[in-house]
Image 1 (cartoon, rainbow, N blue to C red):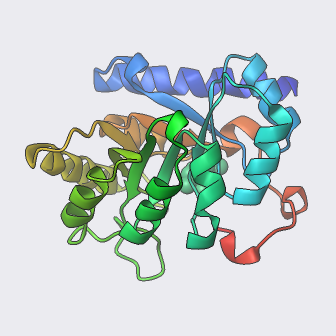
Image 2: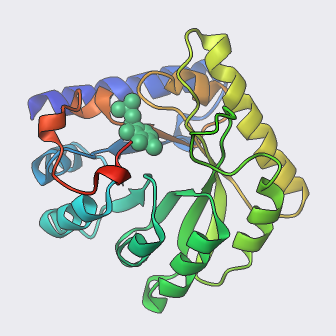
Length: 240
Ligand SMILES: *Cc1c(COP(=O)(O)O)cnc(C)c1O
């Protein structure tokens, strides 16, 4: 687990350097440690190194891990594909969901959010690459969805998330992130109090920070390469 501490330090240094390069305050960029497929021990090791926010993709794996880690100081973020029959545990156990792309899912999360927990923070996932197979709402459908989600009482719409198709080189990586940032500005102009851009992963966090990311979601660079053997058994349809 010593590697996790070193890796976290290296990722924080990358974030700080990218922020400096972009003329941004590093404190405006949150690091989400994506612990999917890794055990509670990995989360506990990262937590001991000062990491506070963790991202998970698979509902059952996450709920089990949250119970095992049992640390009220951790902020849990759901970032994976979400099926409507699995919204309840997400509404009950997470602080944020980054991967909402339909009003039906948003409505269920709002209805199922326990009142005592306060509103669930939401990012709408946008399909910036335009591929038919990729998850996310289209740019054309985004404004209406954002207005509808912002009106739901159990949720607080915070901003936008994307997972662009992999690209080589800074310029190609920056393009989809720039488009997501522009979409966020349009929602702000339309009167929505949104402030969050969840974008950038292990391979492209510098490009995302250059375009205004406020959450980078980093798995491999912190916890190492995910192997199928490390993945728990579960619903294969949920896997990405
Ligand atoms: C797995 C995952 C990440 C982390 O990806 P790495 O390349 O391992 O940093 C970030 N965001 C989402 C939505 C993911 O599913």
